[in-house]
Length: 54
Image (cartoon, rainbow, N blue to C red; front, side):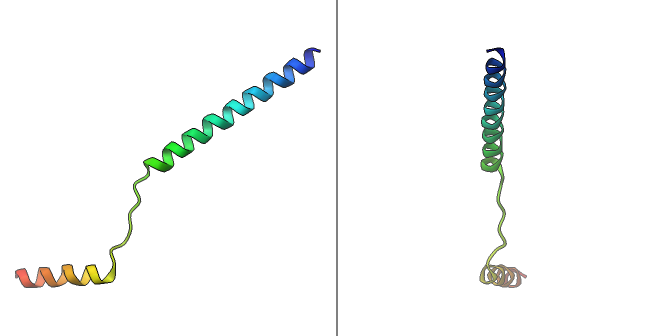
């Protein structure tokens, strides 16, 4: 009977750890700032704007 309680306790601890780690991972994923490269057309427009200013 005592072994069943130990198995249940360990199982609850493992499940709790998995849930906590999943929430931490999700939180970090949503907090990450994604950066993308500008489109080639946008780069050309910026270069043209800079040339026109001078």
